[in-house]
Image (tube, rainbow, N blue to C red; front, side, top):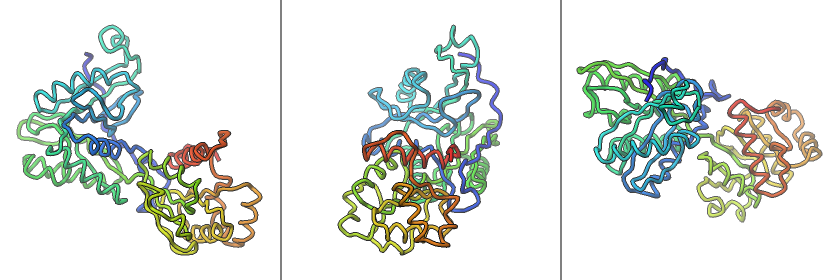
Length: 371
């Protein structure tokens, strides 16, 4: 395998339109939450593969994870299928030894076709493989970060991937204590705090009694929070599509017959008057099919000044009428509202319409939306 070289220090800024509006930092890569859900379904021991550094063109970026189980099955991807089989072989060695290790792939030159795995992806990556089971430090660190992000809070994780003095693996502030020499723990803990403060991930060279080491310190903003105003039947596939991406979803409706938690598994459901306070969110979709309620929801969203994405279901004529009802308040939505909501993909079913809505929200949060 080619020698792994050329990784500069990383400072991965959280890309979102809410950077200066705490608590609106957002993370579109929800592989952490997906992995935790998968681990809950299959509580057996496995190996977690974490991408800790990249160069050139790669399918995923640092911080992406996948879970490799003892039977060879896996959850998540680190490449488009090019590396997973080889990672599985390394994972068996980790399962057998019980010790974490880092593996490197460099596919940037012609040697990859002859001596590598033949992917031809023109990229390089370093992957940390470590045991992860119910009682491992990695599982404890992941669970703590997951609890924070699902509560809408930021978190950080430290992946030590190169060291002779510190056991390779994933840590958080709690699991660092007692597992790492004091001097090193202090440096790693300070870096974890700085990542949250700066909303940025980073690579860190740290001191150690047996020589310097390197860690990837990952900033974890919360996943997107979608607010759905209206709990009609067509709101269900919108919520399901967002939840399938690992997003947080809150559904509000003034009608008790619609505002039923069982209709939106995995979402927070509230029964409240349309003109009442609305929770902070990264995106909101107004789709109650009740004109007066939609006007009331939009008035609250106009007054609040956020989120930057507000979708309105219905044809242009209905949007114009709602604008007239809002009067001067409509000005507060002018640059934020999308109506009719969604990308034009020719959708005709509720599920297709939901796909078009969630796709537009995703593009907006990623800064890729064409208005």
